[in-house]
Length: 116
Image (cartoon, rainbow, N blue to C red):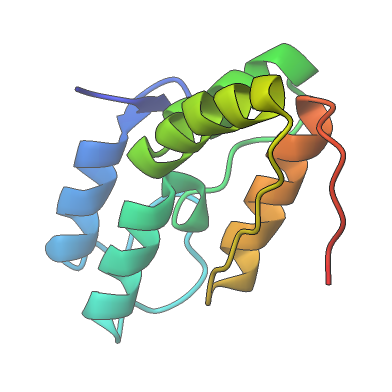
C-alpha cells in the first residue's frame, strides 16, 4: 500500500530515501546521522520525517494523519470501537512528536483527551 504525502511522496519512497541517506529529502533539516532513529520515525509516521505543508483543510489534514501510518490507521479503527463501547484509552509513546500527531488527530476527530 502506498500512502501519498505532499502530493508526490509516499511512505515507501521516504523510507527508501532515508535508507539511502538522501540528504535532499524535502522538509528534512536534520542530518541523517542516526539512520536507525530516522527509520523508526518513518515507521511511526511519515510526517516525523517529511512534514505536511501548511494550509490544508481539516478533512485533508485528518486523512493525511490517518493514512500516514499503519499504526494511526489501526488506532483510528480501535478508537472508534472503544468510543462506541464507552471504554477509556491510555496511549504511551517515547516520541513526543508522535504524541503531538496523535493529539492533533484526537482534536480533529473531536475526541475528548488530556495530555499529561
